[in-house]
Image (cartoon, rainbow, N blue to C red; front, side):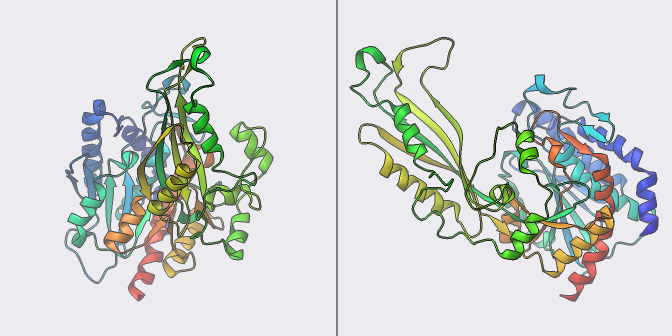
Length: 460
């Protein structure tokens, strides 16, 4: 492993240049204008994998293609098989005026590499590819077979990935999936993320009069839909910051004392965190820390709220309608379909008879949890220690990665979430960045990971 680590250090500058080339593709999956860019990016990635000696192909789907790259050409059943998942698509860069440099013109400032997709997710899965290169160039045999599955639709919901997994189930059968698409508190605290929150999305519409009405002539004789909706939404949370929906907490698995101790290891300061967020003070469910609230407790959020006149100046009306977009973050063992029904039922109870209510369910994903004390997880923690030269911690992530549930449901395996992004990476925001020390540590972690995982997998 020493030879591998020396190779990674020696070639780091070249690796960064190659990553910059990868980042120049505006591979925005959400916008039709970038379909050619998506195609070009997927083919560049496949060709790069071939240069590393991997058997690579671009596989078409009804949407954007999936890049497959294998470290083997003829399967050897005696060797354990793992998947590495990533995505080459990126979020739209808007608003462009808030970027300090063009989003698809990578820029290095000190230890930071700025570009859209640098941390989410091109830089993170590129670290795994470079680790494989180092093993091959130093004659270090991999103790397991790897298949890279790098899709182009993660940022738009991975609509075609489940079908892809179903169609290729036999060749993708593996012991576990390794995913680097999460974060770490800092370079001194590498982390294994063992739980993710799920999500349930809804859109709520309240309709009153058949048209906007003059508020002077008609105001006071009809219900204002905007006021009605605001009152309904306000009633969904109580004074202690809890979701005020009957049955909402029935399936929530409480945090164990061990989990709470692990979460307290995460570096955190409420005042510094509030300043970072630009808020005067923090808020949330009573009885829990800010870290617990944002990673391990369920929430209800209003994502968007609109009604009536939004232009310059005033327009004295009673609006005809009001709408809100809601998402609820879920924890084990909450089910998105059941939670959506509970919310809908409560909104119907709260809705006055003077307006009409329509609730439309959106996307949903179940929460995910894997035992952090299992042998594969412990092997991953050892690899993190070797890669970062620091003691790793256990994390619960507040966001959702729906595809981990697909891997478990379709392939029957768990995922090891080994993130490399720092809190200031600005994923999905202007000035997204990737810390080059995290890139280097991620490559070392990946190189060591397979040596740690293979004996555990072979012993099962």
